[in-house]
Structure formats: structure tokens, C-alpha cells
Image 1 (spheres, rainbow, N blue to C red):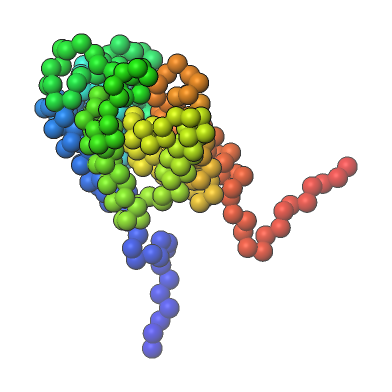
Image 2: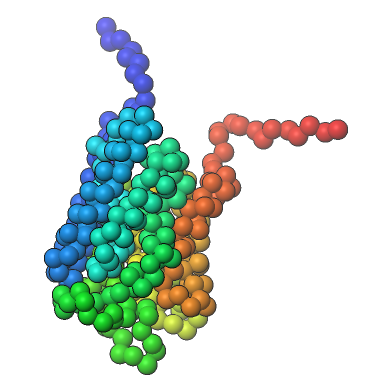
Length: 312
């Protein structure tokens, strides 16, 4: 006679632990990192290693000081380190990168309770803090394949004037342009994003609405939508940071609203503002709005009724 076996949730046999999710994210980021190494040279490896090691050390020390359980084995600190490195210019001094790691792990993540309780994406916030604190170092780009880290700063595709010779779509796809070490190759980032979608790690709702809304608005404004999609950090932000579990909505409608908001804000900053990028700021601003988006788009429990307001 079969007995009914009662066990605690989750009951999904395909349930994946946090470490498994993070490992898949790392795998998805490897193509963009490999292309970055080819285009910008050996310093991509060392800068990424410094970011990973710093994030893990800060996570371990902060958890010890706060008398919390050790969480470095869940690989979330490694993912934060890789993502932060990919948002940095390859010429950034190592000590500045360490400061960014401190901001990401200690201030943004651990002071708010750790993984899943932070209100903003750690890597995005750290990048913005570094941009405000060290604007010159954070905008020092080198020419692709020059490997001259002391060369005069070159312009990114979005910072080039209208009269300049703009890179081709092929250059943007393959990453043969100036920029942060992990954001230039749109093809590698797209491959990584589709890998995560195929593994059901992320939903394509936010990335598609993000990229689609930006493209439509740029077309309406009379600019080249494909150029703006491929240039800058759109693919990196859309697939790897606008899909963060802790700082983005969990509902399908919420993900679409989040992506639309990111696309609209990125368009406004790029088209009307003096700053050529905008992806980081758009994701951070939408992170702040996430609780309100979830409140508006949350699904109604079957059979539930709205509580009646007391009169008088």
C-alpha cells in the first residue's frame, strides 16, 4: 500500500539552487570575457580576477563581522565581481576596482541583509559610484587590439560626434570598438543571454521590452535604432542586470513594465542628455521603482476579494 509522503517545498524536481543559477550566469558571461581578452589584452584577466577576489573577500569578512553564515559558496559574489569588471574600462587602476567591489558587496548587498534583500543591483550601483568619483579614469578607453594602456583616451561609439566615422554594424557585433571590457561584443552578450533563457534562468520579457522600446523611440526620434541597440551596454544591461532576481519584478507584467522603463529612461538620457550612455542609470532608477511595479502588477489570488474599507 502506497503512503502519501509529505515533504517541504519546493516540490519541483528541476529546482535549481542559487549556486547552480550563478554558475550558469558565469558560463553565459564567458564568451564576452573571452572576446574582451582578445580585443583589450591580458589586463582583462587580471582586472576581472581582482574584482572577483575582492568581492569574495569583502563578502566573507562582512558576513563574519555581522555574525552571519558564510555565503561565498553560492557564487553570487563571483557573479557580482565579473559583472562589475565587465562594466569597467580595462585601464582602470586596480585599487579603484577594489573600492567598487566594496561598494557593491558591503554597502549595497550586505548592509541590506545579503543576497535577495538588496534594493539595487550591486554591480550597477558600484559602476555609477565609480563614475561619479573617478570620471577621468572611468572614461579612459583604448583602441581595440592596440594593447597600449597608456594611450590617449579614445571615444566609445556613443560618444563619437555625428561628423566622425562611425563603426560598422559588424564592428559593433564583434566588439571591435572602444568601451568597457565586457560590453563591446553584442554577439557574445546575445549568445550568453539566449543561453540563460534556454536554461530558463531568465525570462526574455524584460530584455525584449527594454531593447524594443529603446529601438522604437530612437526610430521615432530619427536616429539609427540598430546602432543604439548594438552600441554601449544595452545587451549587457538587458540580459544580465535587468533580469536580476532580487532587484527586478517577479511578475511577467512587471518584467515588461521594468524593461519599458529602462528603455524609455535610456532613450531620454542618450537623446536629450549630455551623457552618451544611460543604461546603468536607467536600471538603477527602475530598481528603486520595483516594489511599486510589483504592487501594481501582482496577480490576484484566485477567489480573493478586496478588503472593504471601513466607513465612518
